[in-house]
Structure formats: C-alpha cells, structure tokens
Length: 500
Image (cartoon, rainbow, N blue to C red; front, side):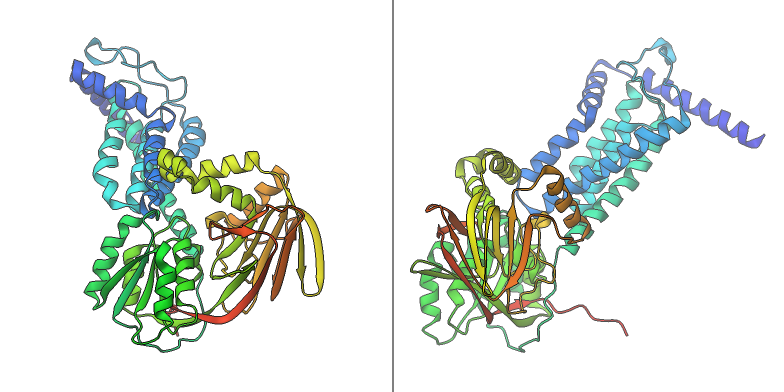
C-alpha cells in the first residue's frame, strides 16, 4: 500500500513539474530549448564536438572525444533498448499544464528513460573525466539538452533524471575503458639500469608540426623546475649538424627528442656514435617509440620522469641501407600501404583542411587507391616471394598506433628485428586482425607473415617501390636491414615496484 501511494505521489510530482515547466515558457527560452534539443538528435552535437577535439591532434582532447563517444554508445545501447521496452512508459499528454502543447513532435519511442539526456550526460562525463578543462563547456551544454526535453514537453522530469544517471555511469565506464586501452598500449623495458647520471644541460630536438607541439611549453617548465637548463633548440632538419658536434666529444648535453616518431628518429641518428644520452618527450600523434619504452604520453609527465625517478637503459636500434644511404631507427621502416598512407598524412594541404582528422582520411584514401607490389624477402638463408600490400621492419614492440599489428614477443632488447609482411586481406580477415589487436590477442592471420630476424634484404621487381622510415621517404627498394644490439642509451621510467 505504501509503495502504491509513493508511486502515485511521484507520478503527481512528475506531472506538476512538467506543467510548471510549460507555464514558464517564453518565446526566447522556447527557441533556445528547441534548438538545444534538436541539435542533439542522433548525437549530432556531440559528434561535432568530438570532431573538433580530434582535429586538434592533441592527446587529451582526442582521449576526451573517444571517452565521450564510447560513453554515448554504452548509454544508448542500454537506454534506447532494454530499459525503454522494460518500462514502456507513454509520452506526456499532448495538452500540458495551462493548456500548453509540446513544442516538438512526440517521438514514437517510449518515454522512460530519456535517451537524449543519457547521451548528453554520458558524453559530458566521459569527456570531462578524460580532459577536465572541457567541463565548463560540455557540462552546461549537456544540462541544457537534458532540461530541453522537459521544457519542450517530450519527456517527464523523471525520464530525464534517470537518463542522466545512466549517462553519468556510462560516461565513467567509457573514460575508464579508453584510459585502460592507452595504458595497455604502453610497453615496459625490463633491461638493466646503467646507473648513469643525467647531464643538467639539454639540447631539444623539435618539430613544429608535431601533433601536440603546444605541450612543449609546460614540459619545459617541468624540466627547468627540476634543475635542467635548455641550452639549445635544434630543428629536426638540423639534427645532422648536432650529431657532428656530439661525436667531437667534450661535455655532452642530454639530447631530448620533443616530438613524434620522426623527431625521435632524427635524434637517434644524432646521438649514434657518441656517448650522449637520449630522452623523449612525446608530442606526436602515435608516439610508438615512447610507448614502446614505457614513457608517459603526456609531455609534462614525460618531463617529470627526467626530473624525478628514472633509469638509463641500452636498447637495440635497427639499421637500414639503401644504396649509399645508411640510417638507424628505433621504430620502423615500412613499404607499401603504409608509405601510401604516410604520403597522404604528411600532405600539408590535407593537414591544413582536416587537422587531427587527417589520419583517418589519409588511411581511407590509401586503402581506396593502393595496389599490391611484388617483393622478395631474404633472411636466415631463406628466400620468399609474395605480392604484398604492407611490409614493416620494426624494432619496437608498439608499432602502427593503437591498432597496429605486432609480432608476439617483440622487444627492444632482444637483438632481433620484427618483420610483418601482409598480402591482400579480405575485409573479414582485416576486421578479425583489428579485433584481435584491440582485445590483446595476437593470433596468426592467414596471409599475414610475422617473423623475427637478425638480418633482412628486401627487393622488388618494381624500380620505384618506396621505403619510408618513421613516415619519411628514405628511398626505393632494394634495402638491407641489420640490428645494432644495445647501441642507444635512453632514459626511461622506473619499473613498477612489486609488492612483497
């Protein structure tokens, strides 16, 4: 009896609040609330904000976009499916309090809970959890969308309240999943600590086009607060001159690569043949080398590693020779589809138009236009011929961003190179490979050849088949690869302490 009475009272309160909202309408608030409600149809408002966040090319805004959209996916699946059909509540009446009518057409779906409110709260919660600075923008926007559903007369207040509750929970879950995916993508180097002291003077090797270049300023502040002095800033294109100076000896600075994988490659070639130590502040888009070394993806956090507890480890480098050119690398040399993608992704016109969305657009264009190439692999006394769409020779266990295919057991201290050669895959097998990567499995995929080698020679019947090193075109095949064990000394975070 008490439960029935409570439900009647709640129902009466619901109707009274709905009528009160209708009585307090005005021409201005009506237009604003109708616009807010309609902007969130099919989550278009949140998709637009996500596109802007992604276009910044910076890690935290991209994480916020991913967390918010994943939260929407969780909330929409739950609210617009089982919950609405389980409750089956009818929409508010077509005549509200004070003879007012709904301002928008009543949807044909059930009323409880509010899907618009759930999606709005899910996006705002997920995005804010990943990037708190967004809170003052997205939280009021989500609140306006939620209230608009009552103001326009298409939902009861309880529909909105419950929808917001489910949205908040979904947003927190989405943010946690994205955070765990990023944490899982970071590899730890378990090599011995060389016990070397870091020089207090720093030479920064930078690239203006790095995805999160604006994060360099707060990273420098952390370094300077930690007792380091930035004596020189060297552009990537001048890293060769820096290498000549380092090999002359004397008091060597700490060389800090502040940028993406291309910047790291330039800095590695600068320190080769010298006693200089290398540190990395990841400011790029994928930052595969940094994640392979366990370096935090945030610039300030990476700088704090140098200023606080750290280790110096010797890691392997790959070496590639094309004609009379020779370079070393920590990440990967690629040919085929990845080169086609790199050419699109580094196109200044495309970057200027699409910003952080350049990568998916470049990938779509490369997949649409690319054709396989004939190649021959010679390694360990074997020779294999195939028609490949992708070839990568990698030294890093993390390669190709969050969705990269990797060789199981890959390590930067095992004295071997990791090779992936992929023939043309059917869409189904491509989806299978991506799903396996997302869930952390590395099952063999038919027509994808993964191997570990000491040496490799790659040739092609095509005279213009290009090879790229960390996204920059190095030359055309043939090419020879070797591994240089323990040839680069790099600063990495300490290993996690094991509880006893």
